[in-house]
Each structure stands twice: as structure tokens, then as C-alpha cells.
Length: 188
Image 1 (cartoon, one colour):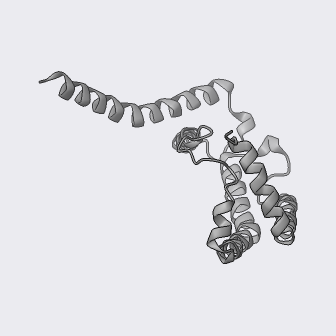
Image 2 (cartoon, helix red, strand yellow):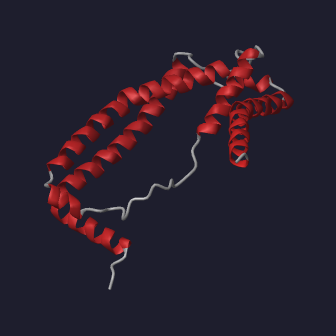
Image 3 (cartoon, one colour):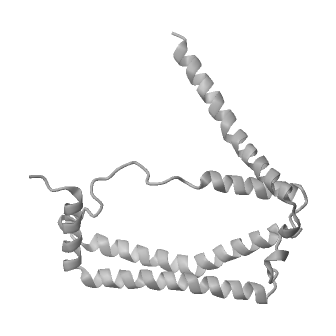
């Protein structure tokens, strides 16, 4: 009788936890502390940004420049204060994993057979549309104008223009490639 992958994975977890419970507890504690620290850095940055007047205190007055400055500085501080220590800890964890004998590591197949399929969609197109939208707002001269003063029509048409730019950016080369491929396949 064959053992399915989930039973095999559960047995591997039990075996791993039995042998390395202290390491697992240490990593679980580190992960929880990193998550709490990330939230605290976020809250610190929000209060600091308002106190130093990097951004207006009311959302009604925010401009695209305020949004981008806030987000980029937040990312910088999160990477500096949380990301770098977590990356160093991950490197130490990898070295610890490599210290486990190869025969023992082969026993641990936590996630069953490997698959090349992705589990979810990517956010690259959304990011490109947002970048195109920011570029359109900048070109229109509304970068430093409060977002609350924008008419809804401007917001909608700018977003549709950004979507069209991304569609053209990817659609034209894809269409040319498909036409070229169909032309090659149809000619004997």
C-alpha cells in the first residue's frame, strides 16, 4: 500500500521536530519577533513622518509626491531595521541546515514532490500600471496637487490611460510575435 504525500510530509515534520525541537522553537520565536518588530517600525515611522512634517497630518492634503516619499522611506527603514537582520538570520539558518548530515536531510521532504507550477498570479502588471499612472500624473503637472482635489473623471481616465500604455507596451510585441509565429507555421 502506497503512502500519500501528506502522510509522508507529516511524518517528516514529526521526525524533524523530535530531533531539532530547540532549533525549531528558536526560529519560530525569531519569526514572531521579526513580525512584531516590523509592525513597530511601521508605527514608529508613521508617527515620525507626521512629526517631522514629511507628510501632511490629514490624508485630505496628501499629494502623489507625499505618497511616494512616504512609501519609499518606509521601505528603506523596514529593509534597514528588519530586512537586513532577517537576511543575516536566514543565512545563519541555512548554514545550520547544511550542518545536518546529508542522509538526515534527505529524510525531510516537507512539501511533497516538487512542482514547477506557480501557486498564484504575480503582481507585476499591477505594479507597471501603478508606475505608468504615477508617470501620467507627473506629466500632467498634478504631482504636487492634493489628491482630494482631483476630479473622479481625471482619476479614472488617468488609470485607463496607464492601462492602455501597459497594454501597448506588452500587446504590440506579443501580437508581432504571434503573427510571426503563425506566418512561419503556415508556410511549408
